[in-house]
Image (cartoon, rainbow, N blue to C red; front, side, top):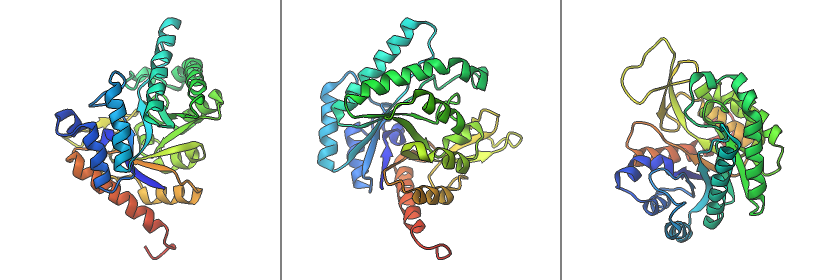
Length: 297
């Protein structure tokens, strides 16, 4: 088991210019992380081969594994030409991940921001063939690099555990799995403990985040709140401080035998560096506590 950080957690520092992606790698190493997930927000690598090579070498010198490359994608396009343009775009990112030495990639299959009418099961089923075909083409292309490609429970349309499984079985590729985000089930009002239990057997990488939850009829006031698919309120929290039953989920993961990368994601209102440090420390502490016999924690 290795605990690390998504570069997205440091987005505010990256966007402000306080920190570069190379600084982020060193910061993770200095603050107890063992790996970093590349999420190209606040910086770009696809058009900068020199920076790509610098990231690979910086991670190597800092002793930080590059665990995953995570990117948006949308295979639900209006024409066949646009569909193939999107597939070709994602393939270029597969090549980029290979240049970085990364063996694991997460891509979306639909747009992240979609209107409510596209969150339905009917829309999902009507467009499943495009999500499936795009994912198959990317998985087959990535197989030449011995790379695992994944869909995350992410983006409202493919966020519930059953929809993720529906896509996984439709794609039916040995190197196509799921990046399991323990918190994102809440965005579609699914109990995170249940979502994790259902999709843990299909997971090749795990994201740890936390949320504060308020029901639809209890407006929480100001702050970075957003709405779930059914109108409840969520706000990002430091792992271990929000409303997700983190200890139960840690125990489920540990009992499953999973021993891969665990990536902390922070997207709350607190200062991003201190919040990310606390989140990684909390996850490591909770993981170690879980190794103790029941009743003595």
